[in-house]
Length: 309
Image (cartoon, rainbow, N blue to C red; front, side, top):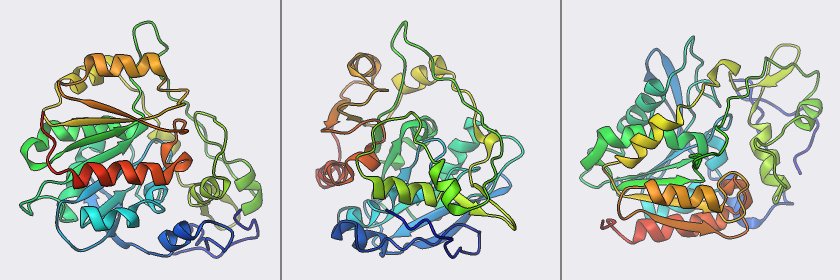
């Protein structure tokens, strides 16, 4: 568990977290393998990109879910470098260490995928990177894939939700700006959305702590409430069906969001050749539930070479 005492902060006001000795050794090594930080200008704001590895091929771009950020990938990314050569995790605008916008749209989120992949050297190397996305991040990734086409190897969509016929549509839950007098008070209020049992408290603590930002006299979340935008599921289903690159679906085996009915619907409408792989004993937040199983799946995919449809 992360110490609830007031931590030191970085230049952006976000807590600098010491992983401590009470977490697994693999995680200690990963969280002390600090990435190179880059700022990528997109549509008038700067996007935070974390980069591991210098080899140009084949490359991996990691996109997070709504309200999350690039640091969710930090326990995983260093373990993918040997297979991927270069691994890049980024924060969408309005989240993590990225800038906020006056107005958000999926067109801008799509542009962020393409610009980050371009500016961090994942594109144009002669080898095709994979784009990996979790939850909400799957939507702009699908959009970007339609434009990148021959420039990428394919996309991996982790616990993506598309409602089956008759199922409830996901509705954005906009929250106002919250203020907390102490780091401990703020950490006590951190929740995963959707709610689920916590498998790795230390990992959820790390994700939560890095979602906070210290202001002059209080703590608040680094997620812009206005970045919560609605999803037109019919439109994104049409985009998903027409995806022109190979697709792999990874699903938390006990996901309460992408259950068996939703998974069957995804496969029914997916592009030809799409594979579905269940990650054992994982709920919706696969990155936090079973990080090593996710690493194994991604390593196998990368090392398997070009996916044949």
